[in-house]
Amino acid sequence: MEKKLKIAEIAARTGLSASTVSRVLAGKANTSARAREQVLACARDLGVMDGMAAGRMLLNSLIVFAPPRAFDERSDIFYYRVIQSISKALSPHEVRLRYCPLDENDSDPALFLSRMNEPETQAAILLGIDSPHIHDLAADLAKPCVLINCRDERMRLPAVAPDHRMIGAFAARYLFEMGHREVMNVMCLRRYTMEQRLAGIKESWRAHNLTFQHERDLLNISSFSAKGAEEKVGAWLDARGNRPLPTAFLVGGDFMAAGTINALRQRGLRVPQDVSVMSIDGFNLAAIEDVPLTAVHVPRDELGVEAVQMLQQRLIRPDAPMGSLLLHGRLAVRESVRRVRPGKGHTAVEREGLYDNQTSMPSARLP
Image (cartoon, rainbow, N blue to C red; front, side, top):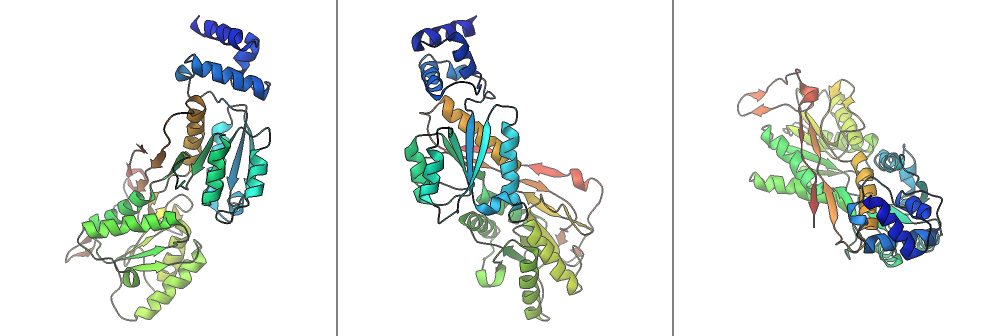
């Protein structure tokens, strides 16, 4: 009864039919932009939006801006799967999803504005776009916009991203808790997000009274490819000669972990019997050949779902404070990391229950 009264009241205040009001509040596509604006504004004034179900989408068209490589699974599988998760989150709703390639740093502002100013563009998601100018334009356009895996330095746009710093710290701490002290970090530092992971790794080193030295403890790879990691790690191993090796490699991605394991094996080293290898990724290669990969899973599919929900909240509460949602990782314990006990070397990894032994870290919303 209360719902019917609200629809009737909104219809009376806006001069629209009750059926039009009902279609707008149900997120239907067969309503005009003007009618939609009138109904939503009146609904906010009457407090209707506060009680609406979060799952009901209040938009009919959404555009996703992302680097060109994000639309090719072979070029960037992580971003490609994030885009798929956005599409999946919208699939139960009458929302038209469109896409626009945009360079992550040297973005084309004219292209961005032309797509954002199209009448059918009601909201946008920016995936991995680092251009501050694009962020300013998005904020000034006053259309709902959410960032994924990037940040607005002026704090005018909401964002959702993995908590890269904590994920890095968590991964390094796991290795230390497994008894490793000599750890080589293999990273690709092409974006600030990877720098954040490295910062977290360094925090764990300090927490365990260890001194991190870039020239000793870090191999910086130019890409996330297996080939690049295999070449860089192989050259590093060859240059060491007979000097002692680290007991573990912490690698910033599954494909780089595959390259690292290949380089080790080519030199007669077994994983994990001789050297442990851990990845920060864990989605693309659950096992490298016959080695199940211990990894910290970086949130991926959850990013699209949370971004869609965040857009919905912006529509319901456009004046709510801006903030960032940082998603934690999840540890998957498999067989590529062995425990090191002082004076006893490596101990065997128990196979029983390894694939179900997972530790979850809940998401945390930051103000």
